[in-house]
Length: 609
Image (cartoon, one colour):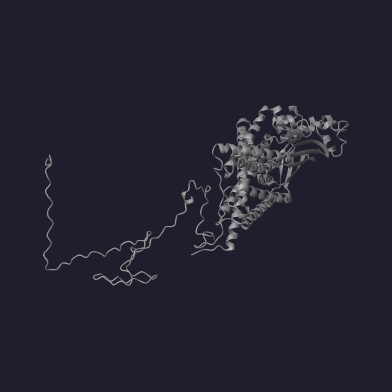
């Protein structure tokens, strides 16, 4: 009995597959974000749930708007204006990997291959559900975080001088005769040491001990509109990259050209970028063992290892960066960047300028070149080698990898850009500003990516051909034709009783004898059989039995006949086998048969001597 899949069943399967894919991806992203925030110790200042939702929204390109307010001595006058534009790529990479793998697995499970309409329907279901969950996170991602001022403002005994130490330097504020006459500060006259007679020069030393007990409240909220648009574009980009980087997922016939041109280079470069992420994570784990705060180092590596790795890769390929840093954020940078960006204003950040501060930075260029060469070798291994010459084959690999790298390097530069700005205001007067910006040249990255990718593809193809690895891992997914099967639909309404597995390699006549063309056979000459019996019209020979009756030509053979008398290849029929030999019947009065004679006695052993 055959089972035919109805449209309702197909739509339900698509919906269930999309639900499973999106839910597993969101669970993984939420788990990584929550674990990273917990290791950083951020959950000590606020609720972990809303902060996790905000970080996941940032990971898919959403927008989070924070706003701060400082309350001290019962007076709220210090406000903080904050702008954050950074993507925690550790959360993004985990979600993208799981989302892409599950989506590709659902496509491979479609019996009979995937069509353009089915692919569009499955992608639309995943994008719609993912965007809906981003909307839920935007609704949940708003809360407030309260941070003690002790964590932000250093004590005057340390000699560091916090933001309030700069109050006497503000224009006109140092000349104030007393504080009791300031609007809104009359209540401060009763404070010990002030009495309305203190000057602004005494303000830091008198207020900082009291401000140590103040608290900074940061309210954050997710912007719903921009976050929904960014989430939809993010998941669509992830699905496109997954389809381009997968080598075994069948594509519709309209996209069959991507198997030969796009997929070998895209899969190789994607694998190399993941290797770079592992190297960044290993560097973060090394910081866990070397630093004095292993929990914070592990949390930072979990959330930002891809940021550092994918920022260093374009930098090692000589892509120029530009940045500026000031205030407290300057101290969170590495020593080389701190010396380079600490002078104020936007400055170029290149590998040569970093090497002036730290010569070991040149290892970044070496690692980047090795990774690009690895991408070239993998591209050559996954590109089928035709009968064309070696130079044509190497040129094709260089063109493939050059085009893909020209698109990938600007994408990495754009994803790893950083922009953080914090401005503290006291009664509307700017007291302290800190900021950090770092961005790269997108156009220069595209040009350099094309040059590096072409060179790596050419060198990798020559190396793979010299080692005998060219085309060794080339795979072309099958594009089965949707034809009805004589056995009825298979599982899930497919065209056959079962779905055959795809071959792991291309058919090769040198190793498969069934694919070799056989030489043409010469036509055989048929010899007419000799006539049986006397010629027609001749009188029968006396004593010769009459010929048996034969069935007419084209009729069925008589009962009990065999094929022994059929003409052979040579034209001569085989002799007809005789009937079974009859045994003579015994009568009841016949004497019994004589027994056989006994065997002769055995001779003596020495009889022959």
